[in-house]
Each structure stands twice: as C-alpha cells, then as structure tokens.
Image (cartoon, rainbow, N blue to C red):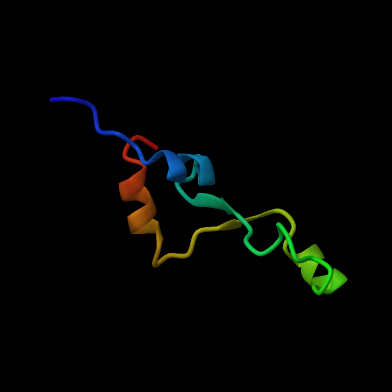
Length: 65
C-alpha cells in the first residue's frame, strides 16, 4: 500500500500543534492596507486557530500531521 499524499497547499498553510489544535495564518493583511484602520491591522497580527467546523477537512488534507 503506498503512502498517502498530503495536499501541499494545506501543508504550507496549516501547522498542527502538539495538543492537536490547528494553527493558521490570518487573512486580509497582505495588500490594500491603506484603507484599513490601524486597529484592524493590529488585530490581524499573529496566528489564529482553525474553526471547529473546518478541522475535519483540514485533517483530511494532512493525513500524517
């Protein structure tokens, strides 16, 4: 039986933490930043956790994570 492949795009976007939760980058902070307020840009810093409704599909994309 061959190994299962992970979706490479998903492996670049998500990191599974030791506790099992999945870390993701924050969206809406790459460009068109001039019209966003300083407060909005500050709150988009750092990473976030994948929503509970999306965890199942992310785990399917990363079989060995």
